[in-house]
Length: 140
Image (cartoon, rainbow, N blue to C red; front, side, top):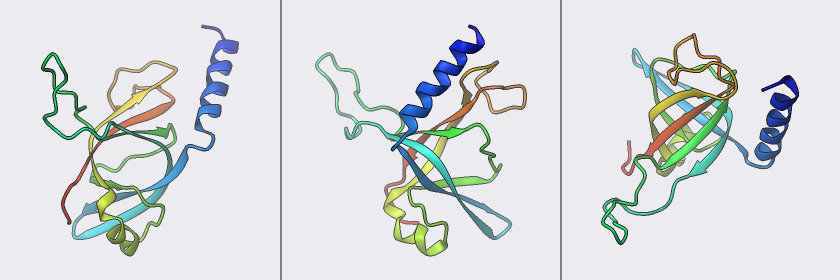
């Protein structure tokens, strides 16, 4: 793959992100302190099929996650990340008001152009983060 191919892929990704980007709040908690940070991402909801619904041949049709979220490569992650709240308001009031849109992180993967191993360790050179989320169905 040459440099022109990579530039074309990046241009297509930029077009896909247009109009899809939204801000979410990362919620961290450690040592009795809660941290909130609003960051941009591209959000994709999984199907709204309840757990346990099967298709004709008996396979469970629900994904193990409720949302797939893309973050840019510059995003840094805290080791104590607890939740992602689908609200652009990075305040405790904003998170409390949006607790029906609160998600826990199932998995963070570094992906994209470059050398990747599928983990979040420094050798990865992917150009974006793919984060799988499970929606919390109760109040915190």
